[in-house]
Image (cartoon, rainbow, N blue to C red; front, side):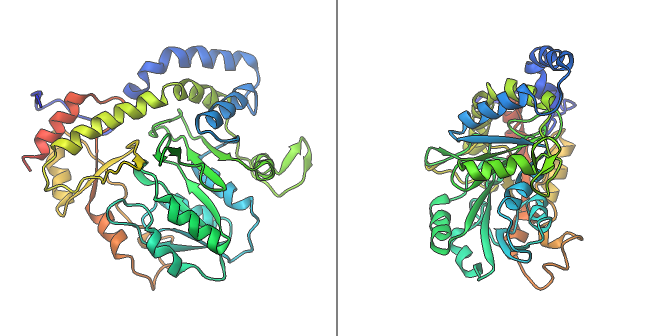
Length: 371
């Protein structure tokens, strides 16, 4: 591999959203002008169009646009109207939003450890945590890799549990050639600006194949109303707006290109980083889209500082495990999650954006291999 030598004072950003979105600016400007002049800014034709396109992209029957990824999970849970205090199983190393969605529905999150190899929930550990109060399993396709879905689906069938997928980081990721978000009752997506399919603000969506459940979600997102001023449910105000929907339609046409670009950059890391770094596991059953490319190293903090000194910015996803968050400590004070702790204290996210090129990644590899 030819390593390109860069000037030491040239910074490689972890992410640069202006550069990542630059290829879309012309279309964004035209689209914004159309929305602006239309005079219709909430639940209009652009939202409807994106919903149709995103459902089709995922081979799903329905898509419902909402205001954020957190709302997508929260409304997915709310649609079932579970009894207060009942339980939902969720991975112990997820981003805190997944857990907040459970708490906001007055339910109890039951944390199950992930696989140290994939960072996704370990199906072999789930059954021991199922109780009479368990109502659902909430899987999280973390970093852009699908969970091992077959055994999870079997457990849901065995115990008659609902299955919700947190797809905030897995746009276009697949398990055995099937898109994440299409295995369970709901697939909840975030379009936060850094995602592979990112808006220019907060935005989210839910995909679903059930007509009745879709109808409930459409009401919940709009004050519990299907017909204006007539409220059937105690709902929310969580609507994908016309501007973001228009932008997302533009980027969706190139989502596969974005994913393929990130997969190409990931392949450079996978092939060339030395074995000192624990790299993401890859397997033919999984089509990974690398929203995040994280490695693990026992001297993670030293490595991060070393890379910064060499003008390479990195991130940590995530520095604090959910059970150690101040807001959640009391909830999990008597529980231990050693695998989650190991991940949170050793993981480091490397640059892998649509704005990066192969030379950038080669420079990161070259620098890391000297650590």
